[in-house]
Every structure is written in C-alpha cells, then in structure tokens.
Image (cartoon, rainbow, N blue to C red):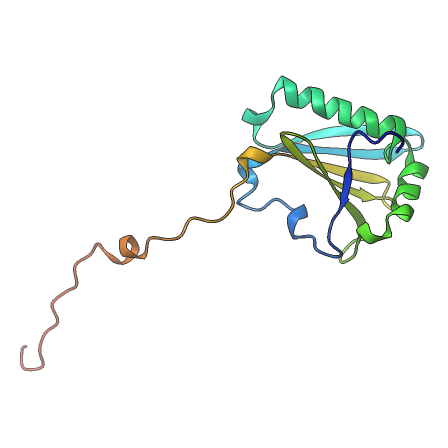
Length: 159
C-alpha cells in the first residue's frame, strides 16, 4: 500500500490464539466484517458483537479503513489480495484451512484481518482496545468451600 495510513502487523507464525475471540475478548468485540469476492464485485456483511461499542466514530473509522483497503490495499480485488498474501509469507497460518493473518491498530481499536485467497473471502474482526480484559479473575476458594456446615459424623459406637 502506498502512503500506508494503517500499518499491518504480521501475526506470529502459526499462532492463531489471538485471532479468535475468547471469553476475555467477548465484551471488547465490536463485530466482524465478512467479505466475499464474486468476480470483481465485493460483497460484505456485518456480524454483530457488543452493540454498545458501535459508535459513530467507530463506524466512520471502519468505513475509512475499508475504503483504504479497497482503494490501495489487499481488498482492491482478488488478484490484489493474492498478491498481498504472496508478499507476506510470514503471515501464513496453516491448520484446518490456510489463511493469512494481520493485526491493524488504531488509537482506540484493534482489527484482525484474516485473508482466505483460495476461498475468495476475508474477515475483519473489530475490537475496542480499552475493553480488553487482561486475565481471568482468580476464584475465591474461601467462598467456594465455605457455606454448608459439615455434618457431625457418628462415632463407631453410636447407632
């Protein structure tokens, strides 16, 4: 992309853990933009996430991001997507399906772009970074094991 406004960060080789929404990320996921190339046409659909995070500012940023990728980036057409993937072999993920994974950060959002050139599709997962949770809360074992008093055990001599 010329004059790169949005920088792509390659994901660590074959490390797909951050590419899928976990319980810790659910509250931060704004949604997912899914796209399919049908000839030269690109059709997209929006898969909702946490609807309270969909703000006018987010929608404007997403439109601008998509427009940038469609004008001068990997989503211009299927050939550009394939070329972009060939130029970034380090982003190749393999497993059940082969795809290419990238992270794009902005001031308030993180985007994970997954490109499937052989399937002619992509997914752009959108997260609001201030909503990420760092770790699971530690369980309160005192609370878990407190509560019911123990039953008094009968001694062997009692009947």
